[in-house]
Picture 1 (cartoon, one colour):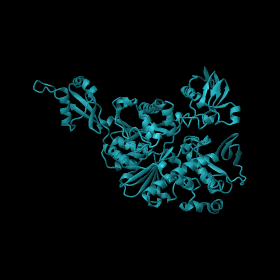
Picture 2 (tube, helix red, strand yellow; picture 1 turned 45 degrees about the vertical axis):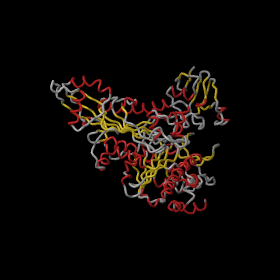
Picture 3 (cartoon, one colour; picture 1 turned 60 degrees about the vertical axis):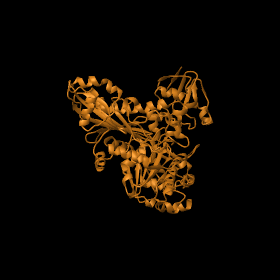
Picture 4 (spheres, one colour; picture 1 turned 30 degrees about the vertical axis):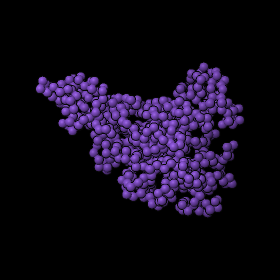
Length: 633
């Protein structure tokens, strides 16, 4: 039994698993934002020939059923199938990823005035040869030599003791000992005969495991220099676009191993590309530091994430022991230590701890706010005295998910939009300056902001149908605004897209409001708003304020920092002091659970308008829209 694609490619079909699983096993990636739970309807395919059984039809229209559409996640083959996969159902996990700008990392590190102290230290010893008058054991001899160099009572594994006699004698008692920092002190992880390469020949890896992307920084440990960056999509996206759908896949579909292997494979692929480019041996990589949100960390380490999804949203652990790369599956030398940044709570993870570390909020006297905008919107407000945090589920729309023509910020995405005030014609820019193939989150925010200011949509996000614009098309699903069209193909914004963005921005603004109310402060009390995340690279702050996503504050208060998760991982890669600071930050963060806040839903509903039901909170936006705003309220 097989599945036949229009290209002629065939995939072996297993009748015991869904069409979605069969396609994945055959290397064909289908969009499944709900993780195959049968609620989103995004994994539709067209069966041209063959028999199948399906348990799910209510998410398809009668027209789609007549045309042969079926939801791949609940369809099982019963014979050879000839299928067609619509472009809207295909998941492209290739291409260049816009990861946000990399700041001058060395300058950031140097500004912190801490010495370079990576996870590992190398000590070269020329031990005296045993004699009848100095006949202590090999272990005592090595410990004595280490103590003379300042390393007292380090821990040894059984494996190293078993190999000790051979390693000490192989080069006439000349050895290089590699020690690792742990919470229990120094631990010897490697004993190499002779004089091994010094730290100046060593490299480290700072890795950010994001819900959407995986990014690896190759760092020269002697100076902290960023050598290169490699990135790819997180292939866990095949199993679900957001953390909840991946938790569902891991726990209800038995997919924990699949999710772990997907991200480990991504990391190994990126490491191999960097090693190949710079002709590095496995031994050249000395240490690895990893940051990511709580769910990504649990999945990366193979921990059961089920409890994160259910009240009271607890994790297996928020502190992760340093482990050898070999035990995790990362393909460098198996004894290379892997340090994972601590998490604060079920939805406030190591990426946010990294962000606080990178922005130095925990050391500032003035009040600051930090927000990492992505599939989840995590917010921190505080200073050196205290910090409160919350996570609000924004959904994947800011990264193109759940939108009719949405895509991530890659080549071909419409990333900014202006609407001519005289003609109401859209003017677009495209990443890569080629022909557009979709629109990313920043482009959608621009479009909604522009349509609102020009009176094309109301504060409720509904189209004004009496404008007579050529760019507003009426479809069976409702009106949509055309941004680009060639032949029958069009890139548009629908009312459903607008609703998705309104819900996401309302959640973020409500999160801000709840945290401020908890501490009895207002937006005016905040000196700086730090914005992180790859999405923010193309974000127009003015437009984000116009739709009510961010507060109407002086624009100079807002500062975009790029990917602070990987920046924090970089800082921890280089410094024991900063690793300790990260642990302290995780302990210091007081996490407010928005789902149990009595006021969150009120704030959320109030935010489901453009820019907000409380117009006095957005005076500059009200002024920009003027009479039109007043008349449509």
